[in-house]
Amino acid sequence: MKIKKIKKILIANRGEIALRIIRTCKEMGIKTVVLCPNPGDEKNFLETTLADEYYFLEEDGVKGYLNMKKIVEIAKIAKADAIHPGYGFLAENWRFAQLCERNKIKFIGPNHNLLSKFEDKIEAKKIAKKIGIPTLPASDKPIMNKKQLAMWANKIKPPFILKAQKGGGGMGIRIIENKINLGELFAISLAVQRQMATAFADADFFLEKYLPEVRHIEFQILGDGKNAVHLGERDCTIQRRFQKLLEEAPSSFLDSKTREEMGVWAVKIIKELKYKGAATVEFLVDNDKNYYFMEVNPRIQVEHPVTEAITGIDIVEQQIRIAQGELLSFTQKDVHFNGYAIEARINAEDPQRDFQPTPGTIEKYFPSGGQGVFLHSFLHHGQEIYPYFDSLLAKVVATGKTRKEAINKLKRALDEIIIQGVDTTIPFFKLLLEDKEFIKGNFNTNFIEKNGIIKELMLKPYLKTKMKGKLVEEMNEEELADIVFHIYEKIKKVSGFSHTYVSKWLNSERLKMID
Image (cartoon, rainbow, N blue to C red; front, side, top):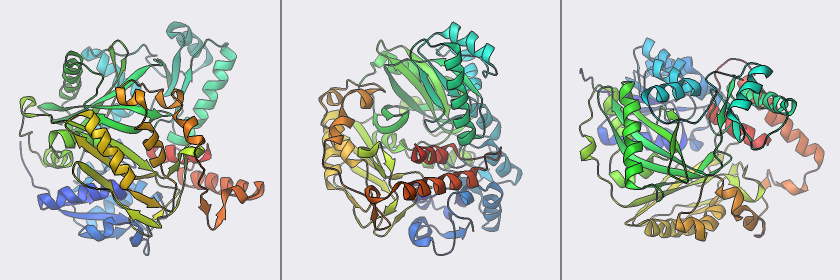
């Protein structure tokens, strides 16, 4: 295989993941180029200080980060060899990957054909089923009319979910737990389609069997087109509304036999497709340890540092090496796992107000540290937290020889970290890490809603959030309605409610705000 060293990478992203990629590039001797919305915004985009070069997108908010042609044009001006998309934004957009390929710029990820396949959840399930990986009963094509809806509802039977064919970010999913009449089901499907059209510019959906008590477990994979290895699993079961909040590795639930089987299947689908790059193969696992393929995420994941902490393998470095034509320099036998790691996603969200996003300005910031604690963040004093970007502020990763030790270190790290100016999910994590059932490892994807943590949070003293000097509680209905209207107008302006590509990641954040 021909190797052509990458000398300069444009990072088509911002915030925490942009800084993460810059660090690895520096260690590899690769120059970096980053993006910034407009002149004057630099102070809120720390990556402009740490990268070798930066260019202005000359567009407000998220729009520039979704402008494929503009990003490729900047890459050509900067003479970048490659583009790293990070996660979110254009990371899974096959059209963007194709545009890079046409302009002879390496897209650090799989080729556009594979991205197109994995975007379609029905197609991905067909690939897995063909290989022999267990899958949940589901419709084999999108539901196009009331007759098809009735047929598949009778065939699969509740509980089942209505699921976006090209969804993501935890959006475009509706659970039907009990048998209801066809008219009601059809009305629900129309409401789901409206949400999908807003979030993904694609309203197609399918039916899939719903398992109420499951674990969400994913395997981190690296493939070079010929060989593939897995770097173990991550347990992503602690979620809210299908959105991950905390991840740990290894899973305390899996036994060695089930872990080995799932790892073999995960590697097999990646090898079968001659996949190049980093990916995660995601499964649902029931109480009897029966596992079912869910999807492939063809990019680096938010939670990748958990795997890096227990394997010592830099996943971003491997992405870059594979993109420049290198084969994997190690085999499955060379991958060793050391101890436990657990990650808490610190979001600018208020857990006492149904996890409502809380934009604002960072008034005080002190990072946690110490032995066995890793912090991934972009925060600094005076940092503006915008309402139109995703709400992730920091990822706190703690490691230990045992799961208990890792949990204790994470508790200590969350006690240390100071983030003032916006509400965060830290109070939620402090309660979660004290929960007896969580500590025992007894939880599933419904754990947050059913174990009483949210109710317990609501009993805590409420800290009011200020918005432009005025308390939200002090606003009248007209003022609140005006804010909601402007949020709606922003969404409509960016997405256009058209077939123009809109980031699933970002729209999930915007729809959370409207909720």
